[in-house]
Image 1 (cartoon, rainbow, N blue to C red):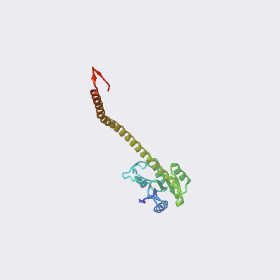
Image 2 (tube, rainbow, N blue to C red):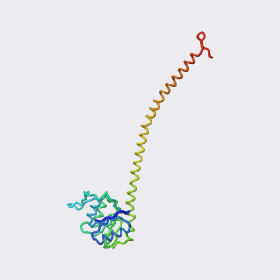
Image 3 (tube, rainbow, N blue to C red):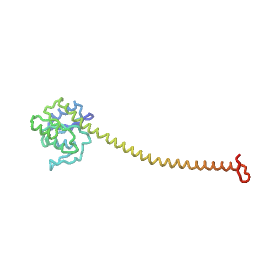
Image 4 (cartoon, one colour):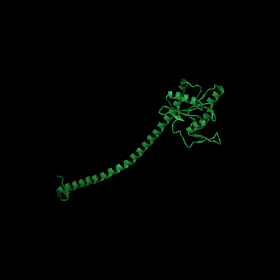
Length: 221
């Protein structure tokens, strides 16, 4: 298995022929793609985090070593391979809820219309005849963009939810703080009010004392 890193799109290339595998790898690198190459369909599934059951080839299980921590934007696979064919790999990918959104492209050196139709009906995005040319790979970008845009569109939703939660938390804090402020203010006002009331009463008393009294009548000065 060979990996090249630090590129925009990540492509998983599957081919049992070493020469064809190297050829497609170089073409993808020229198209500014990160490339991982494997020589069989079963290894491709293992890299994607799935493992074929030896007792039941149609059954898939989660691989103990899940490599799908790295995002895969496209799978390009040869059609004719021993064991699991490219068509079988395509079906496994499309049957998996976790993988079916990954675009799959089939390559073949044989121009068989029925084979091409069957792959396209099963969900393949393109069917290239070998030798694959650099011009063919320009058709891949729109398919890879779909997976990129889908991943990016999921991120703002999580951020928006986080903002809503934080706003609710802030609102609850304000509600809790307001009564506390009101309570403190009322505690501070009570001594002031009682002090002012006491001063007013003292002024009334002192005024009454300063006024002269004649025969139980108070005379205004």
